[in-house]
Amino acid sequence: MGVANYITAVLNFIAFLCSIAIIASGIWLAQKPDNVCIHIFRWPVIVLGFLILLVSLAGFVGACCYKKALLGFYLCCMAILIALSLILLVFAFVVTRPDGSYDVPGRGYKEYRLDGYSSWLRNRIAGSESWNKIRACLADSDVCLKLTQQQYMTADQFFATHLSPLQARCCKPPTVCGYTFVNPALWTNPTNPMGGPDCNLWSNDQTQLCYNCNSCRAGLLGNLRSEWREANIILIVAVVVLICVYVIGCSALKNAQTEELFRRYKQGWI
Image (tube, one colour):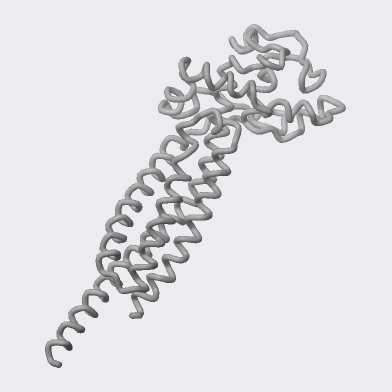
């Protein structure tokens, strides 16, 4: 095996291991309560991981066996995968760049405003038609149930707790509304009518809570932004590895072509 072919085989084995990490991160994303309720965001990372796995295996076999046709197919697919990875990475970065979070004095968590996120996310996810299905899915999830199962003796203990964006905006009334904490499942008036329309939408009914609020929509987008920012790190590493594998794979294909020409030349002299 030529040096370039050997290096390509090793790098494709590394790419194979990276694909497993990408698939695992995709499964992690898909199991999150927000992604469970938003099917469009569940599968891209998993699909990309499986494609990288298959292509890396093809490159590994082609490099080890000097299969020129297989290496050519592998390099073509790798170029497409690199382009798809870059598109997904840039798209995810652009739509998750705006941050609608803001600090709340005296709280261990942040709260979120809907207009702080990209218009694409707001239109695709927080739109009224999409939200009806998402809201019902969130109400059936355990995202708020987990919060009520924790023991908070005082309001100060609750307010000092780190809450996810979903919990901070869907499972409790907005801070500006002035509700009084009794326990995570029960909040009492007075309501601040100047705090916004969400103040009148809050309900202590565990199937309602603030799922109809714009603040809950903002919390969902906050969760998505945080999770996809973490996934972007894996995508960046994957793109760098894929580019390295592709460049050296081109060298391996050239090496395979040279070996074939040398064999034909040698056979012609025998």
